[in-house]
Each structure stands twice: as structure tokens, then as C-alpha cells.
Image 1: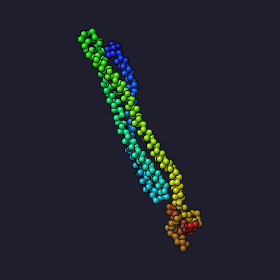
Image 2: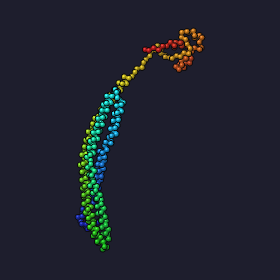
Image 3: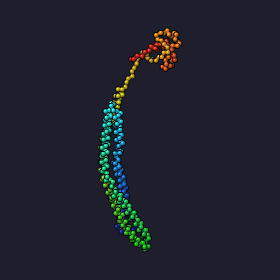
Image 4: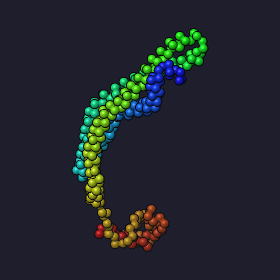
Length: 302
């Protein structure tokens, strides 16, 4: 390599070494550019699609409001439900305002599309110049390895000039492309930073208003519980109580009895029986006169 560098002039060799040493800085700048561009595109997509993301939430609030209106309309809970509906409508208004502000922010991002265009073009050009330089560098090395042959002198001279040109072009593109990438990064931050700051302030204002309206919801719960308890107490009906002279209430089904003529007992002593039906099945059939007193039990109210 020393011979080649001498033929390309000593000052050019030093610049070439410097250009190669800057490769690490160049690669670092390229990685930073790629990450920054990816983040910018992601942010732009967020701003563009914001309305589609909040739409389902807004729809949920609207349908929830309609549901509770139907459930509690013309009920004791109506006034508190109106308060909840109103608070949620305020939240919808905040979301709508937030969406409009973000649409405005998105309209300011058109300049983001071309931030790195020049840097990316120079990156491609640099790669082409690098390949060209490496090609002539390898070619000269190969020619010099066969320098004993006289016919290689003219070939060597011709390719030395091409090599010098390729070295000079590569050195220039290395410095230029690195500068353009760094300048593009600074430009991107200058364009994006104000948008991000404005977006944060807009979100803060909207979310604070949303939280303000949400904070009133827990206060409605004890009020609703209180109304619910009052309604429950109001609707409770005490059971009607009945007074009886006897502690036993029986339903008596008579197969054959005549309470006005006790003489019938003699003739119907066997046939006349007391059947307690389902209530007194365990007793079987009992002689009527022995339990005639049961027929005199009367239910009276207290």
C-alpha cells in the first residue's frame, strides 16, 4: 500500500486515511438517521390516525349514555343520571377538541417527508464512490505485483490516474455525506421538537378536563345508593297477621256429619269418620264425635 499511496501523492494518502478513519463516525450517523426517520414516520402515523383510535371510545360513551337514559328515564334516579350523562358529554367534547388540534398538528408535518432525502441520496453515492475507489486500489495492487513485465508500465500509469480520481471523489463524498446527515438530524429536531411540545400541552389540557369530569362520578354512587335504599324501604309491605283462638289451624274435610243432629252418630258410628286429608294423613281416620271440637275452630283476624 505504501507504493500506491506514494504514486497517489502523499497528501492524498493522508486524506484517504482520514476518510477511512471517519467511517465509524459515518456509520454512527447513519444509524442515528435511520432511527430518527423511523421515529418521525411513526409519530406522523400516530397524528394521522388519531381520530380512528378515539372513535371507538367516543362511540362507547355515546351508546352508554343512550342506554342509561332508557333505563332511568322517569325514575327517582333520573337527576343523578342526567349528571352522569352531562359529564360524559363534556368528555366527548374534549375528545373532539383534542382530535381537531391533532389534525392541525398533522398538517404541519409535510416538511418531514424530505428531511433525509439529500442525505440518503449522498449515502448511495458514497457507496458507489467507495466501490470505485476499492476497485482501482485492488487493480493497482495486482498490476504492481506483475510490475516486472514491461507491458504493465502503460497499464499502471493509466490506472494510477483513475485511482487518484477515485480517491479524491471518495474523500469528498465522505466529508460531504457526513455533514449532510448531521445537518439533516439537526433539521429534523428543529422541525419535530415544536410539534412534540405542542402535542404534550394539548394532551395535558384535554386530559385534565377529562379527569375533572370523571372525578364527579364517585360522588354519584352514595347518592344513588341512598335513593335505592329509600325506594326499597318504601316498597316493603308488612305481611297481614291473623288471630286465632286456637294455636292449631286445621282444614277439616267431613265425609258425613250433621252438627245439628248428634243422634246421627249412633247410626253412623262406623260410617261417619273424620278425614284430615293431606294435612292429617298421619292420623288416618278418626271418629267424628271424639274430635268434633275441631269443627268449632274459627279463624278471626287480630
